[in-house]
Image (cartoon, rainbow, N blue to C red; front, side):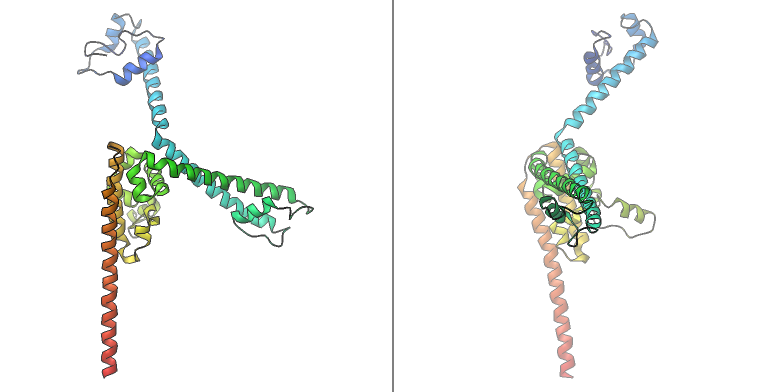
Length: 299
């Protein structure tokens, strides 16, 4: 489509691909009486027919755009990590149900997926009344847990290809969860670091906004060693430092895709400085306490 042609130019009504492409790719500098021009060009018999064709073309164009976005690598990663978490959560929930049920016939019943594995692989309940559905449930729990493991392996392989810098800083699984929570890599890249810092803590954030709780210092990034391995009073600083670097990493991954090893080095230096400050403050406290003790002894 050019500035002098409508989206319907050189197209026929039954050419859905061509019409959708014209709608997606075409542009015009100024609005014009497109319905009238379409009728004059013989594309449509009247304005109603023109709008019917326009509706069909825009719907087809939207459908193709959505399909392309869903096929994008980061969207595949989002689906994979969500499926992994669903499988893991469901397996754990069913494992608890299994433990309660199996406890009615098995004196050695225990909780957790490992008990389900043990039960599914053994014949310990053979001959017990009602044992068949219990063993079947144990097998389903194992299947779900194995599927979660397989999906985790996929996520660990795929994330560095989709977001190399984010995966290097956060680890593949946490990086994938951040992308999932944001709704995609592009969405994550456009978020400020303060938002990245509290992704996954939406409930706590809303409670804070309602005046029912203090502001959360971190969301899902708490699972990162840089935050979890820092003393509680310094986790806010560690979270801000980590979120800042993760935001930069997401932008680099989305807009250029170049691996920037210096991001990881800079984050390491910043976290070391925060933790060293904490250790220095701890040493000062020990010195003061020791001085007070010696003073009391001298008295």
